[in-house]
Image (cartoon, rainbow, N blue to C red; front, side):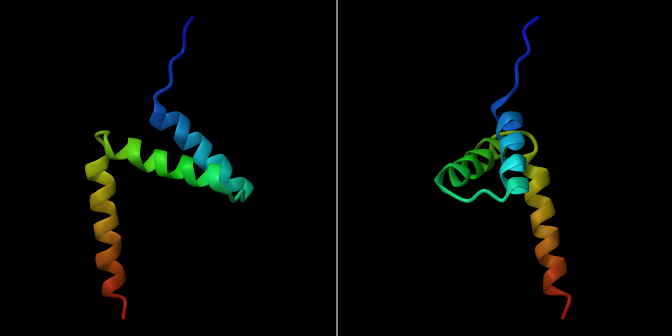
Length: 63
């Protein structure tokens, strides 16, 4: 049986592991960059963008 993972799923798992392990360095920066890059090309990009805009709008109205 062949199991395939998309680059977004693989980089998402690596991102989570790096953030949980509190690793810092060029490899983690590259993984985070690639995760964002590949996520932007998926159908989730519009949802993520809308969520970020809603959080920014809510933060602006806090004060």
